[in-house]
Length: 231
Image (cartoon, rainbow, N blue to C red; front, side, top):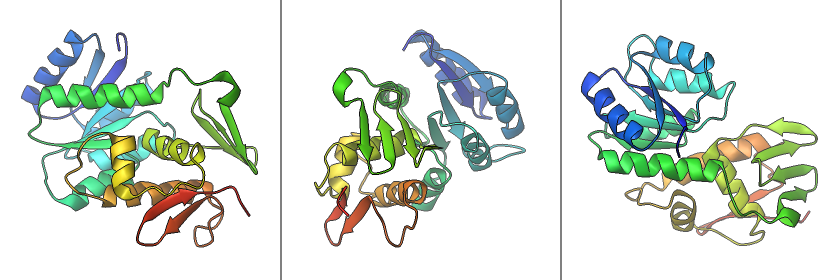
């Protein structure tokens, strides 16, 4: 993880100081911003591998910053929030965040989440002959984590791509929400299954021509979701 650049956006000096010190100890290059406008300026003025983004910020909220970044970039975003309500967490995911953590948090867990997201963003060990999967007019490159549909690029967040990769490499297999949390998120989400539903809905909106009549991701009512390439 050495030399990975992280943009840390938070207006609480003690949190910034602690996180920055801990991340730099692990070899991360950390840039900071104290409000939403500064975050936008720094993000689009440089290159970052991940953004740690507080929800409650001066000038622009964290969700507004997240939305603006998502309009032009798929860089992984982890939201930080002092609120405990489920809808605040879901709202962060609605705007394209890849993960969230509720304050107060353990610095070691933050670092573990960051490293987990970055490992998924840069996959290793993909077999050469299986690096590109084509299903009808969809092409999924497992190495550079890109997706095209009818020749046009589809921009997915890290978690959305992880879900698509899980489905497309296990076509026909039905995954419950619990299965997906365990396989894709790899840690306890305290029973908040809506996280999966939000990501599935966003993924469908991006790859399905008509979400009411899906071509790829289907619902097995009462069980979960599955991917099929059958007409």
